[in-house]
Length: 276
Ligand code: AMP
Image (cartoon, rainbow, N blue to C red; front, side, top):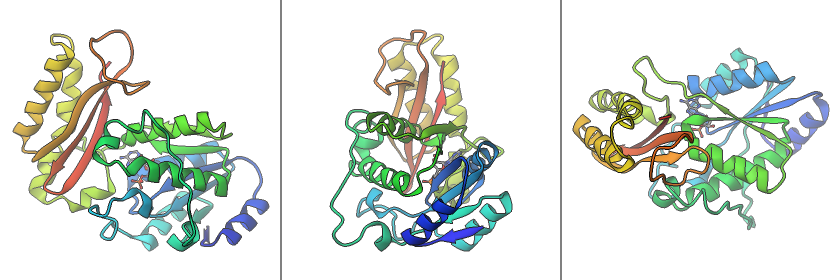
């Protein structure tokens, strides 16, 4: 497996490899969720490139950029064992030289939910993903449904800019009790972990609740259940159109997802599930 650290190395590698290229962008601290994306890419492409880059542009000053877990050696071993062909691991200065001035912004879908709580976030994500797409020039790119809004924002960017890359959403990988795997789960204390593991059960219940309650009542019930489970604060708990992420007034035959962002102490957890 090649480890590419400069654009020059990446360009030389891209000229050298042939066939379809699958790309898996990550911020490292890899777990089974990331590895499932890489495995799908390996299965579907001739060559798989994973990137590891903790993107400063998507963290606000009060967020955890400095203490975000960095485990490069372990990550590289996991990717190599899986059969990934190359890791693109640029430095911050390689990606954002001092005179870097451009941003990519997708309005609408990036301004709700995560975009309200973290106004800088999606601009940071779309700017880096756009840049990584241009650098790596893959045939397909793999993202987790775990970050459902992020997946939809990236699909919109690709559509709007006619980027010739197929963006593929991959299922959420959960632990044995259903907690969505996340690099940030390492921050949870054992007590908080037990609380966090109830979240998926509460979300799953939404599919039952919609049969006897209206949308607002379901959201209220889920909010009560989350607080009762021991979460400290809720950012949002909402039923949305899976397609547009717009609010829904009534349950019709369109696909609906329940999306949540909640806190245990200073740890922010997000999750989502299909309701109908
Ligand atoms: P991150 O390193 O957290 O930026 O995530 C990199 C990619 O892995 C994103 O496309 C995430 O949606 C995806 N991902 C993170 N956690 C999971 C999970 N539990 N299951 C599936 N994909 C995931």
